[in-house]
Amino acid sequence: IYRNQFSCKPGGWAANAFDFRIKNLANTNVLSWGGRLLALWEGGKPFELDPTTLATVGENNLAGALKDGDQFTAHPRIDAAKKRLCGFQYQPNPVADETKLTFWEFGSKGFDLENKVVQTVPGFGFFHDFVVTPNYFVLSYAPTGLSFSALGWVVVGTKAMGQAIEFDKTKPARMLLIPRDGSAMTTIEVDTHFCFHFANGFEEGGRVVVDMVQADVLELGNSFASDAPLWRSADFGKLPRSTLWRYELAPDGQWSRRQLSESPLEFPGIPPRLSGQRHRFAYCAAMGSKE
Image (cartoon, rainbow, N blue to C red; front, side, top):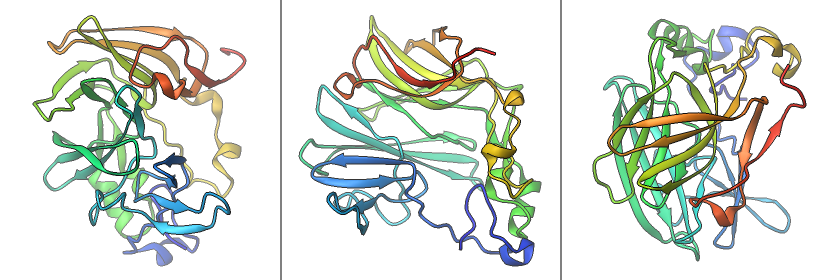
């Protein structure tokens, strides 16, 4: 049994103190690409599965593109026009107070590496999803940070790492436009929010258009307060409402946004053939009422 980002092992502090081992859960998404079936989780490398029996084959480094210490997103994106698979990782460095971002692009027939871009942003970045447009990788950089006092409790085994992540409601979020050609990125300050999942992004009239689900604050849930599963113990009436918004971002820093739906929803998706291109509909898991 392992500790993980958002949970501790049974047995209290004595079973968790100074134990920093993390298990690769590979439990968030699945991907079929280049004749391989991969189970994905942003905290580790993909796990390959036998596509017929679903038996575990083992960790896969994507034909050597992922080096020791590299991870791979749970939400890769397809550039439908170029027929490329795009993925990323984020690696916070609390000592240097910066976060390294790495993006990979793979060819249509497998995992031949077509492009790799590395950028660094200041502070503690916490990113779950991204989108790709013809010229950019796009991320939403929420005002997150680490509580160093909480990290002490993580070390001695009374808290999990997720409890050390803080959200600062007084600071703006930032949209990152990261050119796929490796040139300097553009950072645009926008309203305060947290985004777990994007629907899609595309370019139109010199602007980058991004549809995403966002909430006013980051809520990871307090899964440490009870032995009951979070979905049984959470007070959903007090959780922040996640709704669908469209952002239009210009490389000169201008931006605007508008709400596309007032319904509480999550997990937006579009037809893969339109990924990175203009779309008309986004399909989401939604509640039946705004109340």
